[in-house]
Image (cartoon, rainbow, N blue to C red; front, top):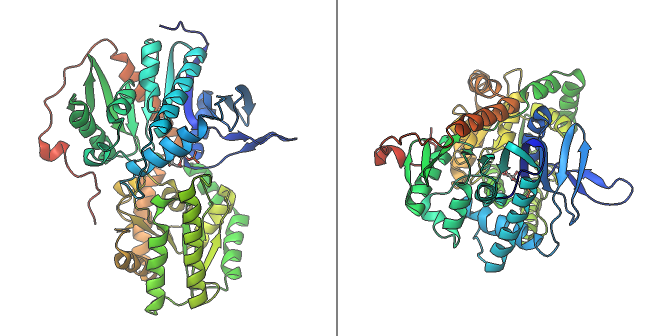
Amino acid sequence: MVAAGGREQLVVLANRLPVERVGGASPWRSTTGGLVTLLQPVARETRALWVGYAGTSISSTLDRNGLRLHVVGLPDVDFPGYYEGYANSTIWPLYHDNVSPPAFRADWWEAYVRVNERFAGTATALAGPGARIWVNDYHLQLVPDLLRGRRPDLRIGFFLHIPVPEPEVFRRLPQREQILHGICGADLVGVQCASSARAFLRLARRVLDLDVDDGGILVGGRRVRVAPFPASVEVARIEATANRVDVRARAAKIREALGRPESVILAVERLDHTKGIVQRLQAYQWLLSQGRLRPPRTVMIQVLPPSRQTIRGYRVLRRTVGAYINAINRQFGPGAVRYWDRVFSLDELVPLYLAADVMAVTPLRDGMNLVAKEYVAAHVDGHGALVLSEFAGAAEELHEAYLVNPFDVEALGGALWRAVGADPWERSARMRAMRTTVCGSSVLRWGRDFLAALAAASRTDGVVPALEPAPPASDALASSRPAPR
Ligand code: G6P
């Protein structure tokens, strides 16, 4: 056992830090993305030490914008196999129900193991006695068990931000047992939604043959609690931004610049295979070709910052999406789809949300999708309509959205069409109901709930509560899909 070396009482581990090293006169640049947006306010409030990678092989610590950061230096030789390979070309597509074919390579796995060991080693050196360690996401699934082996005094939470696959899909992974044992080193496993929690219990039972009840797993005399903690957004900040006079004026200007269309459909996402971008463009094209929507009376805005461009499949996707948009604009007029391929700040997004009559969030699979919640939070006046994929975690909470199967291009077109044409009373009733859900939570509450559950899960240390009998198959093995409405 490694002795407690450091003094930190709360350490957050995530592959990505809110900064990356770019060198030069201003060596640190801010990063963006769902995970960073979510963890930032929580790490700031709790004064946690956030440990992650920042694009360099040199370790360091820094304070930035009220955040305490520790950079884990990773050897250049390991990063591609670990991040581009195992994390994003094996685990990412597999956990998203094989939306693109996962690739399996032994050398990627070896790099993944080495990087996980490095993260675990860093955390054990920094953590004080009895500290809480919050491990985030699919890049670091081996870390909980590595920590437990080295430092049994630690309280270990693991949160998976992406979907948990069904056993039939997960069993293809050559390292399926190692990955599950890695996660089960935690005292608490958090996931985005109830269906993912149930799926994780099924994995433990079917792949590792462990005893489970409907909220936990018995692992070597310990109980690992498994529970959903639906991620949220900065509701108060978004509402305050949406109420600003300049932001409302900006929203009006956006519509003016678009030629005062009757309807604006908006899509905002990272360029990724999971997001269903091509299917949505096809659905829009189908509506245009039928003459049900006509530019310039209707305009689609697509905000699509590129991501993971070091991976070939992502570069190909970027070209494919560009080609689709060009084809639509050639056929139906140059403004049918407005395409912005850069990151937008929240201050830029809120006016766009307000300018959009319909927001289309139609991923093929998504752990949660916070853009959907941001759109709802921004509509303080109760206007706007959300078309939402059944396969996004958010669909388990936002029942009043126009829910749709994004694989069915005609159904998707139909949902967009209904949302555009719905009468204002219906749209507003749906929006108000969704606002009750979204505004009843917040990102800080999400963080507090997880940390409180970690403290409670840890208190049972050494005492193994009796497992309740396994629930009947129909209940425990219920489909992980939200019921279509
Ligand atoms: C999305 C996922 C997160 C994940 C992140 C990684 O935001 O929802 O679960 O951690 O991507 O993104 P990155 O840019 O670091 O590859």
